[in-house]
Structure formats: C-alpha cells, structure tokens
Length: 245
Image 1 (tube, rainbow, N blue to C red):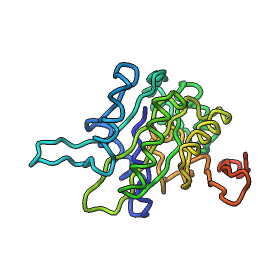
Image 2 (image 1 turned 60 degrees about the vertical axis):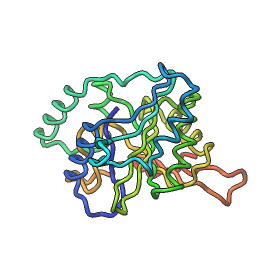
Image 3 (image 1 turned 45 degrees about the vertical axis):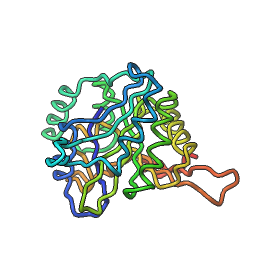
C-alpha cells in the first residue's frame, strides 16, 4: 500500500518533490493499525475511540514518550497486501523518461499493467476535530464489515492548519466499476465532501501536484449532488473529462 500524504492541506505551497518526500517520511514512521484478520472485533470500538485522528499527533510527544505516527489504518477481514513489482516499475519509469517519449496517463497505465501495480485510492481532505473523526468512524466500520478492503487516515499536525487526508483503497484503478463501487461505499457512510481518486502508480513514481510532466495527479473526481433525487455522486473521469455517473 503506497504512502499517500498527497496534497494534504491543498494550500499550494508544496512542490511535487516536497510532497513525495513527506509521503515517504510518513510511510516510514510507525503506523497505528487495527487488523481485522487477527484482532477480535470486540476490541474495535475501543480502538476507534482511543486513536481518533484529531487526537493522535503526527510528531508524537517526547514528554509522554510517544513516537511519531505516520498513519492510522484499518485492514479488513479479507485484506491481502498488494502485489506487483514496484522496483521493476520504477526501473521502467526511468527508461521511459530517458526515451524522450511524451509521458501521458496511458503510458504510465501501460507500465502499471505490465508490472501489476494496480491499486489506487479515493482521497478526501477534512478539517481536524469532529469532521475527520466522524468521517473516519464511518469508513473504518465499513472496512471492518468488509465493504472495502483497507483505509487509512493521517494523524493531526499540531499548530498547523493542514487538513487530514483519508484514503480508501481499491485493488485495480483500471477497473472503473470497482472504483465507482468504492465511491458508493464511502457515500453510504455519510461522507459528502469532494473526493479525488489517485492510482498508486503515481505515488510510487513521485507524481504529485505541480509535477514536471504536467499530469493531473488524480484520475477521477466525485462531487456529491445534494439537489438530485435520489442523492448521488457525480463522478468525472479527469483523463477523458467525461461524466461517468
């Protein structure tokens, strides 16, 4: 599962390389994980309350002897760690850049398919406090129930206005039906904010906002339509610029 602190805060002050470095740092720090494959369900609610994202510090607290926390995550009962050849992917990427070929979504998709690096995630950015804690509770329970396989949320950054990011994963970013189904699960938990979908191949290759290849770092965007009856998401494929729902 690729690290993803991508675009948290959306304040426009971070270059692509900075975001990539920050993502790597978060991934390397300790994670707080509830693994439904081996932890009794009876312990879940207490864990959820103990590790509310607004109360867990990204940088830890030396006075309390707590270490930095990169992510808070829930692994569902059917979760299988991602496969794929990431090292081979990155080697192919270096060759692609040296080839002089124009780099597009399709050329990167080809690399991902060849190396079977196909996971991706819906992203949402939420203010610290009740908003992120409430949204995370609903999504974490959906993971526990097996409606999605895995999700994670960034901890809080004290003395910062940066928002939290929640990531809800799918197995295959090329499977549009699967991507849309995950959006439906997220919306069913009560989340109504803007969602963006990013393939993990972009994260592994360091493709973030304001990247040198001028690629949009996300490939779908979901806006919840409050005026539609019944209410539903309106999802845009950002590669083709076509509405898919």
